[in-house]
Length: 379
Ligand code: ADP
Ligand code: MG
Image (cartoon, rainbow, N blue to C red; front, side, top):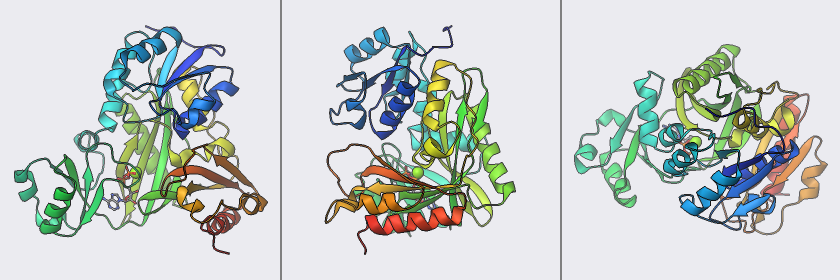
């Protein structure tokens, strides 16, 4: 229907101008594309580097028409884009990922049900939308985690519950919005696999990342994950199978839990993922360059790892008493600093990240632990 490839020199659009949008802009611009960004927040990180920034809501018809008129293709960096906006754009230009994929992955119940329906391994889960559903939860669901079905991120909208009365209290606290109760797993490890899948159904993955969270927020990703090869292959095969089953086009992040030697799918992200930021320096092709390639119908790039790597997120908490000691961080061998240009360092807000490359993974882990101490301002 559309004519591919869309070659450098063309204008591409992106819905969302957060850090993922900014890194997409940089990758696309360095390949010779112009980028238009739509985001309602005029302080968003991508606004300053976009060739054109449109300040409007994601469902603003005039803004969407402007994108449709000037862009050769549109992508997104944010799963909570109204799927109808993607659908609207897709009537006149290529859009990846599709409205359908985004609508499944932006709705926790829809996403988990999709996985269960296609026999992908997940933890047990129940929908909680009514008092009846609340009272029908079996006792073996506990300990569990109550999660809002929509708009949750970085552990927000999640409450651990250990029995029926705590569950009721938690649902009251969440003001009876639609939720999912998930059985809590004893986690040995969390990993993620990024997949890129093209319009013509070619797919490729990057090596699995080993992810460590603090307070429900990703803190570090270690690559390659320190797991048996058989487990890494299993995760890769599952991630590819999910992308195929969704008939996905674009970059897909698949988060996994490893519990008692079993692998479970936690959640999907229809966009580049925080655990894939390491690909900017450590992979032949970054997740952002690959997003451009998929969108434009260009050949997928090689995803080989050039060097073992550790990524550390920088949260707003690091500014608690003063500006972090960037010099100390940059003194560590192999470190790269990324700051997203957000003006207010609020606690838990992702402000940037540090990547540390080292031929010996243990060294990168040690240097990142030092950076982590500098950020928490321990001497
Ligand atoms: P978010 O959308 O905020 O990333 P997740 O569902 O990925 O939400 O949960 C955030 C983190 O909370 C996970 O990475 C994991 O550390 C922990 N967690 C979430 N669900 C479970 C579960 N069912 N069992 C054990 N830990 C969980
Ligand atoms: Mg998650």
